[in-house]
Amino acid sequence: MADQKKEELQKKLRRLGVVRGTGQLKPARKLKPAPTVDEELLRPFTPSTSPNLSDDDDIQPLETLLPGGEIVSTADGDCFVLDHVYTLDHQHGDDRLADLLDFSPAAAAPFLQDERLAQHDFRDFLFLDTETTGLAGAGTLAFMVGVGFFEPGSQGEDRFVVRQYFLRDHGDEPALLLLLDELLAEKTGFVTFNGRSFDIPLLEGRFIMNRMPTELRDRPHLDLLHPARRLWRHRLGSCALSSLEGSLLGLRRSQDDVPGWLIPSLYNQYLRSGDARELVRVFYHNQIDMVSMVTLAARVTRQLSRPDPADHPIDLFSLGKWQADLGLSTEAEQNLRLAAQGDLPLELYHANLHRLGLLLKRDGRYPEALPIWQQIAATSLDDVAAHVEIAKYYEWQTQELEQARFWTEQALSLVASWGRRGQHHPVRAELEHRLNRLQQKLNS
Image: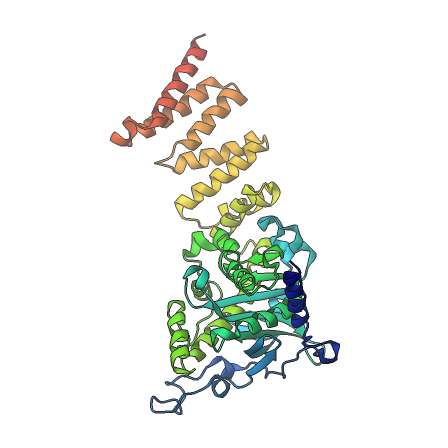
């Protein structure tokens, strides 16, 4: 037990840079200033664009291919670190990085049910994305951890830094985790894309494997994948980050990008050969992922906090439906009504009106819901739910039994038009039971 406590104390001292007593306490580590990102830095070297990288050349190390990168020494070893610095007026697709700072993580708090998001600014958050050796369970390593953060520049102006920690071999992992932990101490929460299910659990496991304490899961976390699916899946289909870049953010990556499925094999190839030429494409891929999360976070928080009547009606429907699910009735009604005024496909038009009618019904606003149900009934050939709601309204709210019978008969006629499917459909028995009850009431 004493040995274990001693080991934990030594580990804490090493994380602070203490090797043998306070005489060797290391000052806070500072990377040398990285150049401001321009268009050239977004075009990594590849054989197709750099004639000095032909197959006949000698092995190309990272330090040669990625100017500005350096090997940072820690108490736990060395790690390759590369910074890219962006000014906030940097244009990424249709958006600027500065756009995000017009919004707050608080916009997502009621949707993700995490009130801690309302207590912080995006300057307090760390954008995070990993590149891994595969999906092999406990043996999976994050050989690259990309982080992004806002910080003041030399003149006091905000800038956005993308920092990439890279394992030149597996033995560099303790150093990578130590450097990451130092940066985490300066930040409060995370912004990721699918990080809640993948990146954070993976890194937590690596911290534990290296006997380093961690509280990654306990931090406020805005995982952009969930709101992206809720807001745009109906309109865009795929909500993978690469798909959203093209369909939502107006971004086209250069030919120097690499598909995600190929990345583990490129890293393994680098470990075997020491040649980093193809790895430059992985650095580019991770870098653009990080910057795209900034502009995507701006789109998400804008949609959640400031929906606009000019927004696509399908997006307004998706937002209104999500708000209704969360009990945000006033906001949901506003967005569902806006969506109903737009050009929705018939199926979504009916779904939107059903949600709006249900919202009004729950609030006891039956007379307002009636014309909505009538609109659905007038335009539907394969759904009798609105007919049933109208019949219920006339039977129980206004006691107009003739009208209730009329709408029940209309529903039965519609079911009969379904052919064999309608003959044994459960709704037919329900409607016939309702009609018999209404007839008995009328006859009494």
